[in-house]
Amino acid sequence: MTAPAATAPLRDDRRVVLVVAILASFVVGLDTSVVNVALPAIRQDLGGGLVVQQWVVDAYLVTLGSLILVAGSLSDVFGRVRIVTWGLVVFGVASVVCAAAPTGAVLIVARALQGVGGALVTPSSLALIIAAYRGPARTKAIGTWTGWSSAAMILGPLVGGLIVDGLGWRWIFVLTALPIVVTVVLVSRISGDVHPEHRPRIDVVGAVLAVLGAGGVVLGLIEQERLGWGAPVVVTALVVGAGSLLAFVPWERHVTHAGRPPLVPLDLFRARNFSVGNAATLSIYGALGMVGFVVTLFVQEVWGFPAWLAGLATLPPTLLLLALSSTVGALAGRYGPRWFMAAGPAIAAVGALLMTGAGQDPRGYWWSVLPGLVLIGVGIATMVTPLTSAVLGSVPESEAGVGSAVNNALARIASLVVVALAGVVLAGEMSTAGFHRAALVMACLLLAGSLVSAVGIRNAPLRP
Image (cartoon, rainbow, N blue to C red):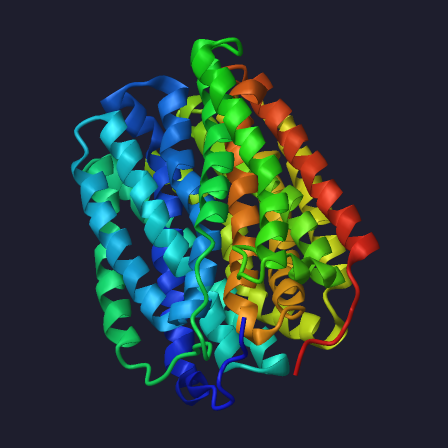
C-alpha cells in the first residue's frame, strides 16, 4: 500500500472520529449480544433445534470473519469513512429482514447479510482511531473504544432479554436502528479521510478462497450433527473448505510476487508482535466465543432462567471490561503489552475451571458461574486492549485497515469454528455434563493463549 498523505486530516476531527468508531462498533456488538439471549425463543418459534441456533450465530460470523479481510483492503483503498457508511447501511437493511424473517432459513440468510455489514464496519472503525491518534494517546483511545463499545454488550443481554420476554425475539433486531441513524449523521461531519495515492486492485480470488474456506469448514462441522460425518454434503463442505484454506497462503504469495496487492499482505507477519498476537487471538477468542454461546444456553435451557435474567446473569465480564479497559490501556501503553496479554487469559482460564462446579441446581450460579464469569471478565479486561495495541502498533498506518481486519477476522473465525464444534462438545444437546466439557475446552484454549503471549510478545515501543 502507498503511504497516505502526510496531512492526515482525521487528526482534526479526533473527538468525532472516536465517537463514530465507538458507535459503529456499538451497532455490531449490540446485535451480537442480543442474539445469544434470543436463541431459545428463536428455536421455539422457528424450530430446527441446536443446528438452527448454531447457524443463527455462525451465518453472521462466517461472512463477518471471511469478508472482513476484503473490508480491510477496501478501507485502505476507498477510505475508512466511506466504508463505515456503506457497512452501516447494509447492516441496517439486514436487521429489518431479520426482524421480519418467516422461517429459520430466511433468518440465517439475513444474519449472513448482517455479517457483510459488520465486516465493512469493524476494521474501518478501529482504523479511524489509528489514523487520528498517535503514541500513548492512541493506546488510551483504543482503551476508551474497547470500553465504551462494550456498553453494547451490557445493554444487549439485559434489554434484549426484556424485549424477548415482553415483545418477542423479532424486536431485538429493531434495537440497531437508532445507533445506525445517529452514526451515519456523525460520519458526515468528518472532514477528511486517509487515502492511498493510487488505488490498487482488490484480490478477488483471495476473497473467494477466504469465504469458501471459512464457510465450508463451518458448514461441515455444523451439518455433521444432523447428517453424520459420512454425508456427501458434509464431506464435500469439509474438503472444499480445507482445500480453500490450504490454497489461500500460496495464492497470496503468488499475488505478492506478481506485483499485485494481496488480500492479506504476508509481510505483516514478519512483525513478531503481529504474528504472535494473532496466534494468541485464535485461541483466546475461540474460548470467548464458547463462553458467549454455551453459558447463555445453559442458564436458560438447563436452569430455566428467563431471557432477561439470563442476560443479567451473564453481564459480569462486560461490566468489568467497561470499567477496566481504559486504565489497562494506559498501563499497557506505559509498560508494554506482554505480561498483560499473558496474565489476562490465565486469569480467565481459572474462571472457566470454576464453572465446572455448576450442577442442576440454579443456586449454584452464586458459587460456580458467577465467580467464573467475574474472573473471565477480569482476564478479558486485562488482555483485550494490550492485544489490540500490540497487533496494530506493529503495522504501518497505511495498512492499519487490513491489519485490523486480519486480527478481527481471526477472532471471528476462531469463534465461529468453536461454536460450530459446540455440537460435538455438547453431544448434540445442552446438558450439565456438556457444559462441564465446554468449560474445560475454554480453559485449555485460554491457557494456550497465555503461554503464546508470555513466550512470544515483546514490549517493543509503539510506532510514533
